Amino acid sequence: MSTPTTTATPPGQPAGLYPLFFTELWERFSYYGMRALLTLFMVAPVVAGGLGYDVKRAAMIYGTYTMTVYMLSIPGGFFADNFIGARRSVLIGSIIIACGHFTLALRSETMFFLGLVLIALGTGFLKPNISALVGSLYAQSDSRRDAGFSIFYTGINIGAFIAPLVTGWLAQSETFKSWLTQWGLDPTHSWHWGFAAAGIGMTIGLIVYVATGKRLAHVGHAPGPEVKRPWGKLVLVLLGAAALFGLVRLSDTNPKFAWITYGYVIVPVLAVIWFGLRNAEGSRHLAAILVFSLCALVFWAIFEQAGSTIALFGDQLTRCELLGYKFPSAWFQSVNSLFVIALAPVFAWLWLRLGDRQPGSPIKFVVGLVFLGLSFVLMVPAAKLTAAGKVSPFWIVGLFLLQTLGELCLSPVGLSTMTKLAPNHLIGLVLGIWFLAAALGNKLSGVLAGEFTSTNPAELANFFLHQALWVGAFTVVLIAVAPWLKKLMGGVR
Image (cartoon, rainbow, N blue to C red):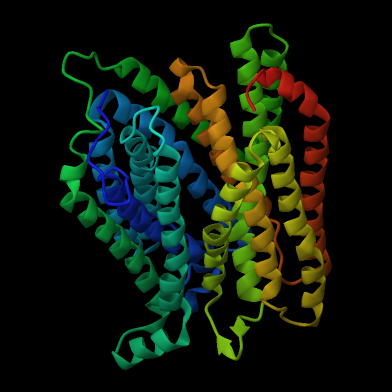
């Protein structure tokens, strides 16, 4: 185990925090910059430089891709822990991600899919392990740990805020397209300039990581040569991930197996009942973990439509204009991160202010789901108003405000609760379950987004309303089982 650093920067944090802060900032810049364009590029007509896919196909690809990004974090974390170490994994992941973005910049459908594969693989190496490196900078009892993670996650949201502003302008703005024309270049290729900008962002992050590597020399080491490598377990982890991916693809491509989608919810519910009725404390805690993970799955299934359903609503049905200035529709993808940056300190202050009087995790999850459901309720009148033409951009701003309030009640609280409930020897497994819930939630998001329509306001209103009602029904169930859930958690809040 690596020894936490004692070297501190002026604000009192370990010296290694800031290289990781900037590396993650630029990695998230690359990811969210590309994600802001992904669905819009796929549905754009071929004559406009896009792929010309219908919404259903584009949503399926988007959901599968975002699912794979999270799912590969499980084998990526396992491989780093047992073979090459977190520090080298982040380096390898950064290189693969940069290659993926630059591959997307090439104008070819084959290169498009190859680029997505490379980004997913690279993120599997980087995402779980850069967080592990941050944790390795601190001793378990170090009082600076929470503040350090807060700084780190601020970097994530700064990158996610800036990215769509840059890549969206390059891909969609008439100004940049006119420049391309003046330079003798095809303006329909502007999408690929946006993808290239995402690659440049990841390259900057890679340079920062390599240039400041000395500050991380004491953490993230590979296991020593005396440690036996668990090749058999690695094969099982990879086979498990491949089997899950195969089942998901089967449900996508063969209508006879569409029922597999229901398993995303049914299997965790059955597992909750199985473990919850056992007497061992560890089993009861695992049941509680599965309940929270199921809540997260439902949350991400709606929330992650920001890059699909809401991106299309913003592009096709919203007036992308403010105070007389026309802006690219991809800029809507920056709103959530802006709200997170503004509101996260408020929530941190609120929880500290309430102290022992703050609600427990189950109630915070309930509140998070309520805000999520309300965000889609808000879109019902917005959808109906599209019958008269494009609507105000403030409908989407309102949606992101409600979703951000829900996210801040659920996401950081959920991660904290997972680590509290997990036995020390199963923390990796429990975090794997949390990542898996995010993966399946992202996939379900793509399935739901496939029903989006921009041509029928009544159907679109029902699209939002039905999903809001499902979230509401799930929230009622969570309220009903909250007393039992508290018993499963024991003394954990």
